[in-house]
Amino acid sequence: MTIPDSTTDVPGTASDRPHVWQSTWRPAEGARSIDLRYLERDPRTTHRPYFDPVLRLAAGHRRFDEKLRLLDVGCANGAFVRHVLEQQPRWDVSGIDVLPELVDAASAAVPGAHFSVADICAPSSLPSERFDVVTALTIPSHFDTLDVWLPNLLGLLAPGGTAVLYGPLNPSPVDLICRLRYAQEDGNGNVNGNGDGEWLPGWNVISQQTYDSFLKGRARSWACHYLPVADLGYPAGDPADGLSSRVVPTSDGQRLGNASGLTYHMACLEIHL
Ligand SMILES: C[S@@+](CC[C@H](N)C(=O)[O-])C[C@H]1O[C@@H](n2cnc3c(N)ncnc32)[C@H](O)[C@@H]1O
Image 1 (cartoon, rainbow, N blue to C red):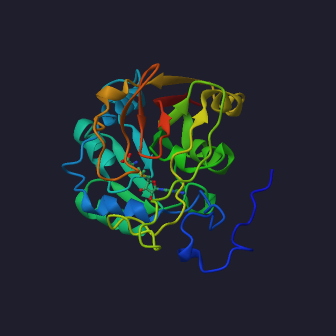
Image 2: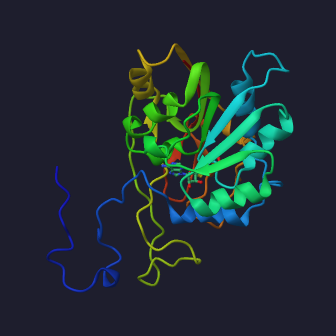
Image 3: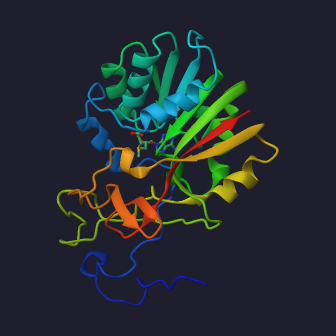
C-alpha cells in the first residue's frame, strides 16, 4: 500500500492544513528535541522505579564486591548512571548519549562517571573499550529495526557480558512501528509549549518473537521479564504531557499508555553473550 501524498494536490501551506498528512516520517535513529527536557531534571533527585530491577539484572549472580564496567546507552541527564554509582561505588560506570547538551549536564552533575557523545547507530562514534554490562533504558522503542542499533550495542560487550534493555515489548507476535506528534493548535504544533509538530519516534513496540529471531546465534541466552506496570512509578491519572506514559487499565490487567490511545507492556530483556 502506498500512502497518498496529500501535500501535492491540496492548496495552501502545510500549517493551514494541520489535519492532513504533512510529512514523511522523521528518521528514527536521530536525536529528538523533546529529550532536552531531561535538562530540567536533576539526576541527583530523579529516581525511576525501573532502575532497581535493571540494576539487579545487571549485577546478576556476580559477586557483590566484583568491579564491573557498565555503560548506559541513551543516558540522558545521567540519572541511572548516578544510581548505579550510589549502589555499586566500586563499579566503573559510563554513559553515552547522542545529545551533547545532555552529556554536558550529566558530566557536571555526576562526577565519578565518564560521559561522552555517541550515537548507538554509528559504530565509529562508540567507545573503543568493552563493558561487562551495557544498559539501554527506554531507548529501544526509538528505532524501527533491531539491525540499526542492537548489533552495535552487543558489540560493546566484553565476552561473557550482559545487556539489559528496558522498554515496551509485545508478548504477542506483532511488531508496531509508529510516530506520534502533539496535535497542532496554532498550526505550529505549539500545544502547551511542547514540540514543533514533528512526527516523533519513541513508542515502537517490537515483539518478543522478533527479538528471539534476532538473538538466535548472536547471544548465548536471553530472558524477558515483564514488569508489573503499577509498581514502576508512572502516574495512574493523565499527566499534562499527552505523550508521557501513564498506567492504563486493560482487559488483561494494566499496561502503560499515553494520550494517543496506544498501550504497551513494559519489560526488561536480559541478554547474555
Ligand atoms: C526516552 S530517553 C531515556 C533516558 C534514560 N535512559 C531514562 O531511562 O530515563 C532516550 C534517550 O536516548 C537518547 N538517544 C536517542 N537516540 C540515540 C542514539 N541513536 N544514540 C544514543 N543515544 C540516543 C536521547 O537523547 C535520550 O536521552
